[in-house]
Length: 474
Image 1 (cartoon, one colour):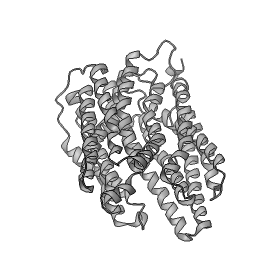
Image 2: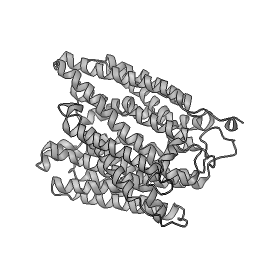
Image 3: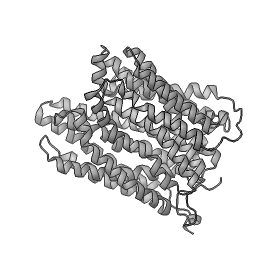
Image 4: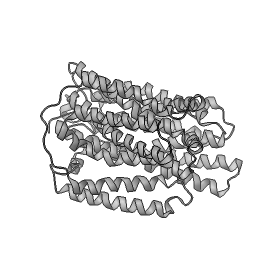
């Protein structure tokens, strides 16, 4: 395999300016997708009232979008081979734009859910394709620094999304939640047409229909089951167990099917023999327990225990985003020079330190201390995610990058949902033991202690990540 290393590089091997142009183009479109997810998450109560629908129905505004993402993510690699990266990016962005406009015009809950599914189809292609286009353009140079930039939407979304959503809901009609996407999509399409390099020759690769019929429903089953965990009964519910068990069975069947069809499978699962990708994907999945699960707990702590609004909770989460922003540039450069292992170990350790204060927090804990803790925690999050994402592409050929993008995206997406589900069940179980005021604080403390423990486990498992090879030490 052609070496595409994320490790130490000679100073002369700087990133080509053309690569940064590609980065800037995909960033604009990706901002629309990431903002959309976090903005809509704060609007479900308003949509319930305005569209005269039950909570169970309105939940599908988010669930339908999530499941549409899961169905289309695996198709990104095949579609890129068929029509080319630039054309596919513009087509996916146009689909997302269409879904956004239609969602803003929705007249009922079912119509809004249907239009959110259209958005999810476009977004599901864009998320892995973003990494693929940039990694292929970079050619293995400065990948850590590049990852630190293209992952900005994932940081800015949680920071600005709830704030923008709260401001819109406070002063404008809910339809503006979707009109916000339109400028990003339009500008992104213009920039893509002008700045993305022309597509090379394409190939008429047949679609692995059997693989798609195994993988897509498998992901949908797992993610759908995990979204139901927050309801009474947790993992014991039939609408959790049955979809998750069926989904896992389909994913195992896909793995067996794809392992015998190298070069013809929807995703080349044999790439997981490559330890950098396999270890990165494993840690991205497991990091969902301590990283994304706790990111669900913290707003709940502010809203349920401290009785703050969604907008106020979103504003208080800003220090965590700022901490992540502060670490990304530094960590990206260090990842290119010293590798991923010790950065990820240190990142999990810092995340542990930033989570600990919440394990002691009560209903009257000083907000200043919690803001400092969130700043530290955010710094640790950046130190974990950037090196892991960069490591996934280490040592891969250009042709292998699309499948690596899809594998790492699936690992992160499923891991985040799993982490949120596990900590939701822990919180619900602790709260049910004695659901009164003082004990409610204890329920959150117990849940945060679990998050601390998961972070420590992540630090230990990070020691398994590959170090630098002798060639990279030269």
